[in-house]
Image 1 (cartoon, helix red, strand yellow):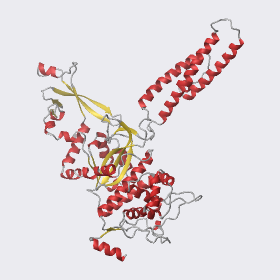
Image 2 (tube, one colour):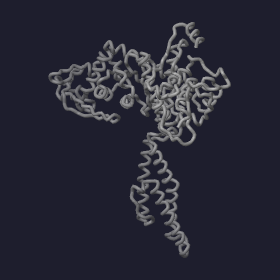
Image 3 (cartoon, one colour):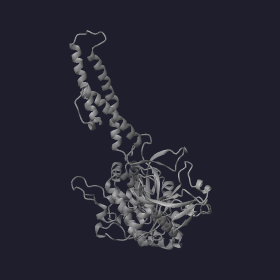
Length: 559
C-alpha cells in the first residue's frame, strides 16, 4: 500500500509561486519517471500499517539529488527542506534520511532502476539517438566503500587453515591415546566446535585429576605422575582455548565470506588507475561494465573480476536491451578466443567489432618484418611443415588439448617439432634448445581463424567507421562520472546496493545529457502524472523543440 502521489493534481497551497520552470532538469526527471508504467513502478506490499511513499517520488528525489552531486542521505533530507525543485518533486513532504537510505538500499529500487534503462532505450530509439545501431561496451573500476585494512587473503587462510587441521588431528590422537577424551570423528576434530568439545573434555579431566591429587598423600617431593599429567593437560587446554579455537573460528568465518571479502564483503582487491603512491597498491573495488550508444548508458552491471574479458559473457547474458542493437563494439580487453567463440555461436545474428590483444601491434611494420614471429615463417600447406627464418624445419607431430582454467574453454592445438636431422649440421644444432631437446611450436587453428575474421571485420570500411566511434562514445561516460560528478568511490556497501547507486548515477547522467543537449529551448509538455497512472502504460516521452528564444518566451507567456 502506498500514499497517493499524483504530480499534476491541483492542491491548495499557501505559496502560489511554488513551481519550477517547465524546461528545468527536475521537470525532465519527473516526466521520464512518470512515463514508467505502474506495473513496473510498484511492488506488491501489505495493506496494513502506514502507507509507504510512492516509488516514483523516491526515484525522482534520488535522481535529482545525484544531479546536484549530493549522495548523502542526510544532505538529501536537507535538500527537501531548502531546495525548491526538490520540494516540488516531493510535494512538500518531509522525508527522513532513514527512509531515503532504506529505499535506495532495497531490492525494489535495484529492480526499478534496471527496468528504467529499458524505457530510456525505447526513448532513444523513438528519438533516433541510437548510434550506428551499435552498443559500445567498456569497463572501469571504482573503489568500494570499505576499509582498506580489514581484509584477509584467501590463499593465506587456506594454507594456515590446512596446517591447523593437521595440528588438531595430531593433538586429538594424542589425547585419545592417553584416554583423556572420548572419540569423535576426525572431521569434527578439525572444526572450531569439535575443538571446543575437546577443550571441555580436557578441562573435565583436569578437574578429576585435581580431586585425585588432593585425595592422595604427598609421598614424592617432586610431584606424582598425576601432577605431571595435569600440568601437561593444562598446557593442552591453554593451547586449545587461546590458539586453536580462536584461529579455527577466524578461518571458518573468513571462508564463509570468500568472494565477499573486507568491510564491503562483495568487493574485490584490484589495481586502480588512481595510484598516488606509485606502488601498485591494491584496493577493494568493483569493475563496472557499461553499454552505451551516442554517449547514453543503456545497460550496466558490476563484477568482481578485475579484467574485462571475463565479464563480456555474463554482461551480454543479463542485458535486456541487446535485441535492439545489431552491432557489438568493445576494445581489445575483450578480445579472446572464448569471447569470439561465444559471439560466433550464441550471438550469430550480431556483428561484433572487437580487436584482440595484439591487433594494433600486428599492424606495425616492425612486427610484420620480425622473423621470429610464427606468422612470418614459411609454411608448406601440402606437407604441413614450417621453416623458420634460419631454415630449421618443423614437422607436425601431434594434436594436443589445453583447458583455460578461468573460462573452461578447451583449445585444440597442433604441435610442431623440429626434425632431429636437418639439412646441415649447423641447422641440426639450431633445432635444439639449450638443454638439448628438440624445439617445438604450438599452433591454434581455431584461434587463428577467429583472429583473421576479427581482423577482416575491423579493416573493412564499415568496421573502421563503427569501431572509430568507440572512444568518443563510451569513454567520455566514465570520465564524466568520475571527473564531473566525482563518483570515484561507491556510496553504499554490498554488490546489489552499489549496483543501485551506480544505476542512479548513470540514469541521472542520461537525463542530464538529454536535457543539456536539447538546451534551454526545450519544453516538456503532456506528461504530467494522470489521475490513473496505469491507464497510460505505453505513452511516449514527448519533447517539443522550438527554434527561437522568442517563440519559447511567447509560448511560455501564453501558457
